[in-house]
Amino acid sequence: MASFRRTLSPAYPDRQYLNGSFPVSSPTHKLPSANAKYSSPLPALAAALQQLVGGVFTRRHGRKGKWRRAAFRCVLCFFVGFLLGMFPFGHMAEDIRSHEMKPPLPQANNAQQLLQEDRVLRNRVEEGFVIDPVSLSAERERQSDRFDFVPRKPLILVTPTYGRAFQAYFLNRLGQVLRLVPPPVVWIVVEMKAASMETAEVLRKTGVMYRHLVCNKNLTDVKDRGVHQRNTALEHIERHRLDGIVYFADDDNVYSLELFDSLREISRFGTWPVAMLAPSKNKAILEGPVCNASQVIGWHTNEKSKRLRRFHVDMSGFAFNSTILWDPKRWRRPSSNPIRQLDTVKEGFQETTFIEQLVEDESQMEGSPRGCSKIMNWHIHLGAHNIVYPKGWVLQKNLDAIIPVNLPIFGIGSSQNRWMHELATIGSNALCRRAK
Image (cartoon, rainbow, N blue to C red; front, side, top):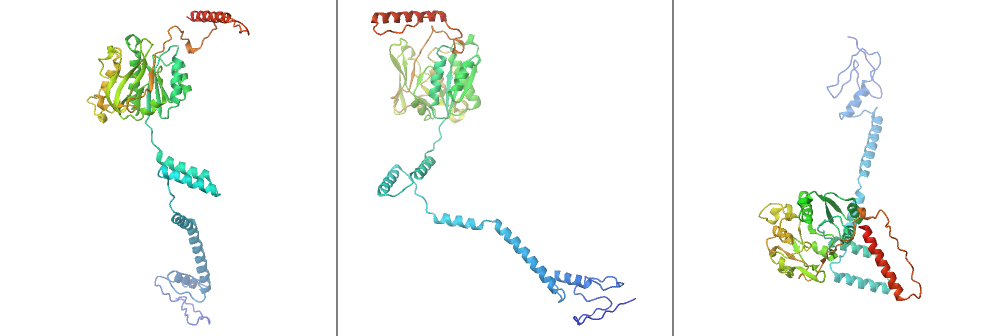
């Protein structure tokens, strides 16, 4: 087998290369074939391998390894610095120091402390100190809003209506009152047979949240139209499980805003006295509870024919929690039958028969307001039987009767003014006959 012999370099006298081979500390390195004609690059490869496995660099390749090591350290430091810059350690430390250094702000717990602060501010202003009143008042309002927020109970108002001459007036009047009531308020308006466009237009213009329902009961079997319209609203509340205080607000009654505020204080069933006109229209009568504080101890009544009723309450003189309709277990009702008004009872007994399904006796009632000493709504029957009810509440044609208006002349006597007044009266009567 042929062999090659190289002379030893004077720079490395301790190395001996025999037959193209050299001693390697690792036993895993094998020599290639010895038939190479030129000098082999294996010494440089072996030096690199020794560096990776922990060997010692030779003097010949030491300078190149230092550059690699310096470049690697530079890249490593740049990468670590980049990662440290991504995390806001400095901002967190500043926030912690700022929270630790700030003392707690004093809060006004009662009206006496607020008055004391106002006195201090006035004294400082008089002495010449400049204080920002806007920021201070804003801080005080923010603190008061934080603690004084109380959720309101929803009000569910049921109004049966029908087409007549005063319908637009009644609905507009009631709608304007409901606009002044703080929300949430749901106004359920029920009509017979079909929902008229005139009623829908009035409801849209009021700006109150409403639901326009239709009672499909056959009119030939109806004894009291309002009873079936209210039952339609009760079915809607029970089906959709509306949670709130239910109140039957007829459109021809007069209501005060204090009434709607007191409705939200009812937990189960509340009642109050109602003022109404007697059938003769010449005096006012009172109907409703007699209370000792909020406890019902008796009833006001003036009609002998209605003294047999169990509860002497007008239809607009009570309200109740809607959950009684669809959650009988909560109120421990003896039966789960639906609660509805009855059309088969005598007129004037619809209220008491309906209330008997809601409560057992006066102990489950709440008198409102305290002592039942204030009238909050009035039941006034206003009829207009001789006035035509035009479609859309608009007269399509002008009337033929035209009366010229003569302006009063200075110096005309009272007899001529009386004659003109009588002429105007005759003309108005002619208008009414023509409208019929």
